[in-house]
Amino acid sequence: MVNRRLKNVGGILWSLAFAVIFHNYGMAAETPYYRGKTITILEGRAAGGTGSLRTRAGVKHLVKYLPGQPSTFFQYNPTAGGVGAANQIAHLSKQDGLTIGNVSSGVFSSAIFDAPQVRYKLDDFVFLGAGNPGNPTTLIIRPGLRLDSIEKLKAHSGLRFANRSIGHSMYVRDRLVSFVLDLKNPQWILGYAEAEINLAVERSEADAMMAGIPGFLREVKHWLKEGFTVPIALKNAKGVGPETYPEFPQGRPTLDQYADTEMKKAILRLYNAANIGGSIFFVHKNIPAAALKALKDAFDRVWKDPQFVEEYEHMTSEKADPMTADDFSELLRQMPRDPKVIETYKQLLGAGPVPPGK
Image 1 (cartoon, rainbow, N blue to C red):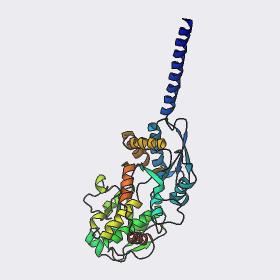
Image 2 (image 1 turned 90 degrees about the horizontal axis):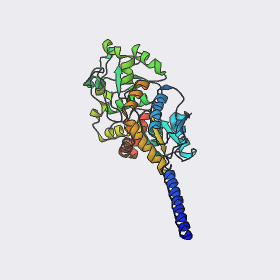
Image 3 (image 1 turned 180 degrees about the vertical axis):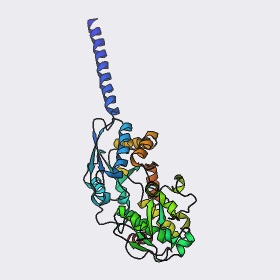
Image 4 (image 1 turned 120 degrees about the vertical axis):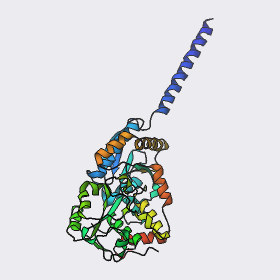
């Protein structure tokens, strides 16, 4: 009788032991990947400025939705417009999911055109999204020329653009407009600092400039009453144009409407792929599956969060219109890879004549 009771007690103890073991195993298996860890946010820019504000708005809400609620640490690598940060994640950072990059679209164009400093491929990364796909832009022309229609613009010869430098994003937009509209003998006056470009056009040192529509409305909206013309606009990578800005003159044509050759259409698609988003979050594709899933799920929730949208717009004075991971995948899928198209785009980026749009 005693032995039988001891055997029963022993069986119960073994059952309890197994229950504890399996309970602990289950708890360990369900422990969030990021619990108790610190994520480094590697920014491809210097501290401060609108780019950093965009990043911080996203990171604040990422932590809220990331299981385990890790802490974050910001690191900066402004080398070559974000290329240094992309190189760092591709080759130096551990592929453990604890480093998240944030860069401008320059890392796309640099990779597409094989810039000498690039040591990564776009396929090395998973792009997780951005709070804004870049702003729609507008061409602005000084009052004296009265170029208030596309017909007048195309008939004019020698339009002088004020800009910063060859290869600057606004320089590329100048050239893109000239290319698609087949402008006659466009010219560039370079070397202006950002704050000087408005003055150059006001003083007739130059005739035209490109500007983001939000900045135009915020800084020089009074120009519309002074005879400055805005004959055409350029949509952003998501296809959003001036229609979302009621204060901007409505009914203006957009550049894509004048892409009347296959080459022009391909160049616009390549431009969009090379200019995706303002502050793009990305990780190395080889991080642990649990980390990647957690990040994708968390960012998906960030981009849908009305509180993120409100805070992003308050912090940056830009409209929030998030680009998701799927948006990035689709734009990259549509990106032309024809060597002739890429070579034509390289000519647009350079200092020579604008290539023909055939």
